[in-house]
Length: 593
Image (cartoon, rainbow, N blue to C red; front, side, top):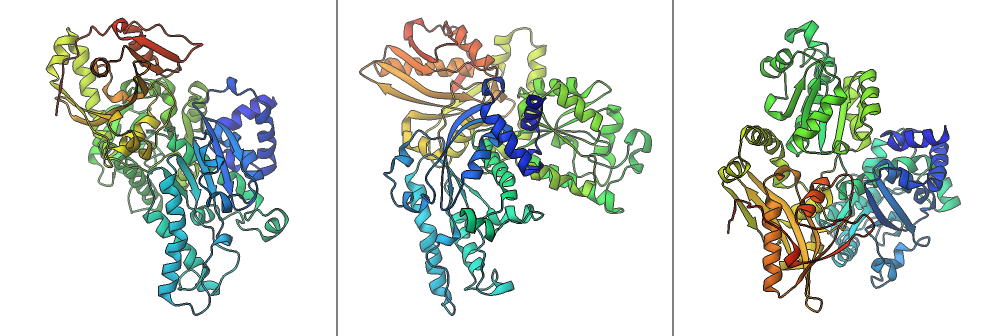
């Protein structure tokens, strides 16, 4: 029974709302639990350094990591170590095998908190000094960093106007934080502590008594909320945040049941407070779509009637063109969500499902445990707050591919339709008039390339991550792949990173990823052909790579088998002779320069 409670907690997006003592007990049980029994997507090493005690926080992070699909080894440096580690970048802390650094500075260690009657020019100059100390550190660290902003102090200089007056401690802290934000590099994510305090207003954040006892500045009850937000950002960095929203319709994006109430009878618009709440929720969903989140409908309704609301209702913020896949019938929702997954060619663990029915939510939870489920059965004016409290999305680096994603997935449906109707695959692929571009890595495309390496699961050799800064450092040995055909310009859809070992006569692929949006176009055949040619030119006899077999990368497994490579579950290291690689399929792709 205890084991079931633990497993349920790990799957619960609202784990952070449980009682602190219960969470601490679950955390202790989790540390003894065999993680192999869990389907955790990524394994990472996380190192913490702080200006204060993080022991209680560190104890919770493995549990909340698992809650976000991450198997994390958490390493905690000595108490108060950040103050000296930040001044010694040659320390082993920075060179250890770490995927993400968690840095937690304290406003208590700010050097230049304003004195009374200090002039504005001096205050601004000092704030820059404080901020640029950290900006310099960021420039020298290539790995991913999660860092908390400076926290509001216990004390103030000007009481209730401390945050809106030069010379106020809170104003100064905000000034330092704003300079950090303006100079944020792509490998650094900030956790906005002041925003967390606002969102977690029901819990006292600062706790003088706890600080005096343990040198921990925040109260014990804030720990789950803080742990959840740290792990949410880590999941975003690792590409585990949600990409697809599955929407019910009745009493979810409008009030009432359209089949019974008709288009004019549903609650939507400014005429009623409830209707306004549903309009606001639709506005939120549309905004998600604009940032690259894919919206799909899964409803038990007559399709004609439900689509009519999108076309004819004057207060509908969402339109049919905002919906990538629209399923409205009377089949069970779990099966329909699986169909949507196949159409989009995206894994179910990238889905989040919103429905007002507890029965439907429990059914989907049971049948599809990979899908995050949020029951919206309460006040519609609180829908957005409820969803955002879980922090399921990640918008650090929004690229042009994100802006075009919804349209891209709608056109994939056209591609799949034409392909299914074609009797000859080679004739069909030739008709696409496909062109590929092998780009040079630069400051413009490094964000998207790093994002792809983190997010991609189905076509990815291994779990090795590269921050944008890492990729720029690779120079010509990192190649982003752009692709277009008669349907659309897909933008950057893949990237590979390689190195040459002349002594071993080996071209080693450090990682290679490709978006599932362009599967079944033989792009992988083109790239392996390119890599073989590159190997010949570099006088290499072998291609090497590390490949981790997972449940998700079946497409890549099948491709490697087609090349004549025998896969081994017990060995992830491969060294293949060039003349043993069989790449016989014609790709019908031309190089665009």
